Length: 121
Image 1 (cartoon, rainbow, N blue to C red):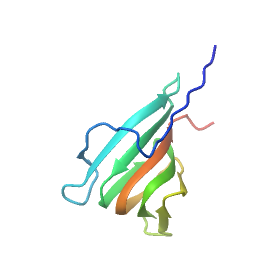
Image 2 (cartoon, rainbow, N blue to C red):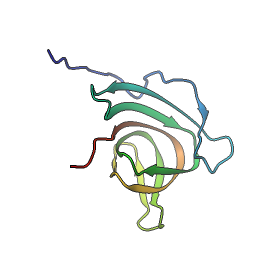
Image 3 (spheres, one colour):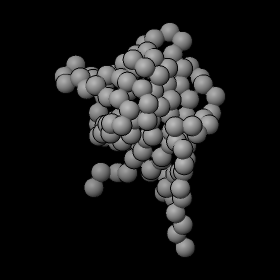
Image 4 (spheres, helix red, strand yellow):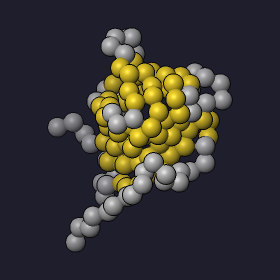
């Protein structure tokens, strides 16, 4: 039997403790997250992530990421500097598998994320 799950009030959901962000270019920038669901094959994870203002690199070589921004503002830019995108609460950001770039968080951010490592067919 396959069951469904409901996660409510994502804007207030308690997260794990804040820790230093490993890919940060801003000294002292911290992040926190909580995984809500993982697929049986482990290829898909859904969670909530929060990050303090600052600048960091991101590498989606091995996985696509889909982000619904719950609160905050940021600029997301491809590694080559092409087409910076401004994102804020209410937006959906798609970072396809293979994407590399940088984030600049302008206002404390919280997002719902889906990370998919399914092999390309």
